[in-house]
Amino acid sequence: MTVLILTREFDMSADHLVRALREREIDVCRINTAWFPSQLSLSAELRSGRWSGTLNTEHRTLDLDEVRAVWYRSPEAYQLPAELSAAERHHAFMEAKYGLGGVLTSLPALWVNHPARAAGAAYKPVQLVTASRSGLRVPDTVITNEPSTVRSFTDRGKTITKLLGASSIYEEGKRKVGFTRLVDEKDLADLRGIEVTTHCFQSWVSKSFETRVTVVGDRMTAVAIRAGSASSYVDWRTDYDALSYELTEMPDEVASGVRRLMDNLGLKYGALDFVVTPDGEWIFLEVNPTGQYGWIEAKTGAALTDQLAELLGEGTP
Image 1 (spheres, rainbow, N blue to C red):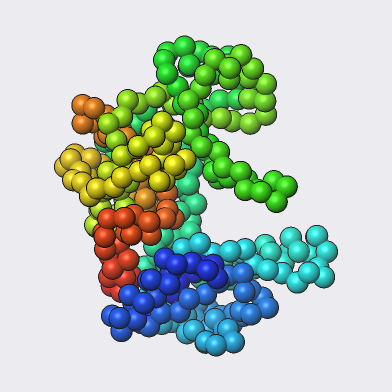
Image 2: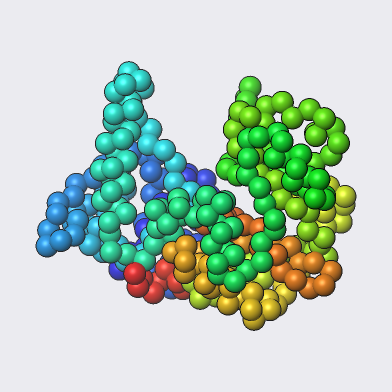
């Protein structure tokens, strides 16, 4: 049995997981998909209804038949030869995506998470409606590119706006992060640009604190995150130094809703965020199928790496 880890070159969480698997005497192979095709090659043949063959690097030949579990961590895009034209590059990338990617994603292994499930769950509107159907409470939300809809929604009360996709962009050599923030009168006075694309607005939920719930298979670890500054009270990512962490318990009905949500989305792993109101209600915000957990483990001592190693070590699709 081999556990395959698909991730980037430098990944501390992957380093820790490799050690945890080896301590359990489980064979592990770590591959960066950016190595393809210069440092990684594939030879696969359809035999008896499954793809058999090898993934080959300078230091390792991986027998595909031995792969029983895959951690789809943070794989990078294929690095194609520089001399290719734009059209050739696009063609080669698509062939690699559906060729190498198709072979790997068809393996009868335990995926944490399967790329198709992770991609589907990445849609925030899908998350919210699935969470609601799973019995979790969600904030009132509008998604629109119409200024009149924004004004009508904000008339109902205090409102925040947040991004639906990637939380950052790279521009002029700098990484710019889009944090969740409150909508103010200045925003409403000038809504130019709203029409260019969809935007997400949610009713503000009064909070006592927030929680990060890390789900690994059947295990759920809930951590209360308390803000110590004005900016982190709105979005705790703005000021990590002002945060405090504490392991906490989830209400049974919330835990049941989380299990249903994960099953409905087809996920084995997820990092979920909740707001806990002063009345003790848990309000679902989102789930990240590939969310970070290393800093939670470091701050609380929660054995998340060990949980992942045990899940992957089971190797049951």
